[in-house]
Image: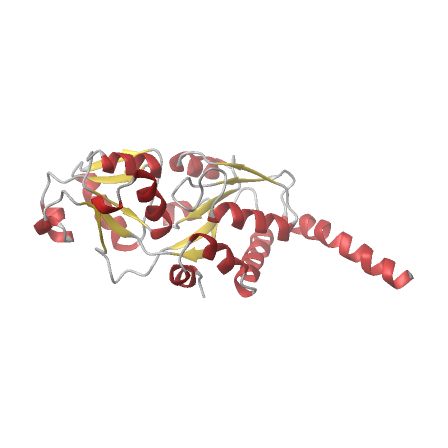
Amino acid sequence: MRIAWSILLLALAAPQARAAGLCPPQPVRISFYEAGLFYFDGKGIDREVADELQRRTGCAIETSAPPRARAYVWLESGETDIVMAALNNPKREQYAVFVPYMQQRFVTVMHRDVPLDKVNLAAFSGDTGLRFGVVRGVTYGGGRDEWFAKMESERRLELGATLPTLFRMLKSKRFAAMFAAPAQYEKELADLGMRDQVRLVDWFPNDPPPTRCLAMSRKNFTPAQVRGWAEVVQGMKADGSLKRILAKYLSADEAAKAVIK
């Protein structure tokens, strides 16, 4: 009987022990990205990933879904603790540590009204009458960021606060093309009934797929806590939990490709 009680007490104490080591004093404030299947109507890939992280760490969480640019401002100031579906860049590394959990390639989602001879990267870039859409505060990684900077210098960008807003702008032909990953464009195109109104083109086939990360505040997490959360994410990969979450929202092929080895 004493042994049984000891086992029960250890089991009950485990979540508190994890929380004491991995959790900041206040509830962990998580900012989602309202973008296709990542997060929508209070659910999505990142909602389920966050719920699993809460279960495994024992930390209390509070959630919000601000515009992307605001989420990074909050992360830098310490007003939020984690930004989901984050992409790394040198500026963000100054105030956040990045824990990868999935990957997906961006493609160019282009309105079918763009003439076929303007579909490739060089031709599109050379026509200054063609404009490009982007969510304010978003980065893409690799050659896309360099190209994006060129479009910005030529004043050829149309900015939207959220990804759903940007897709509505594409439908109304405010611009000709934009970058998006399958987890983003599949839902947004279906919601707007415009799957047959676009072409999907990969302008940067040699770039590796960008990794989506937990961007964790350097102000609010200690290095030891970050390592602990990274171990929790690795555990979700190792036992198949992450793949099972992805498979609820993506095709079997996309879910398999999205899990980082």
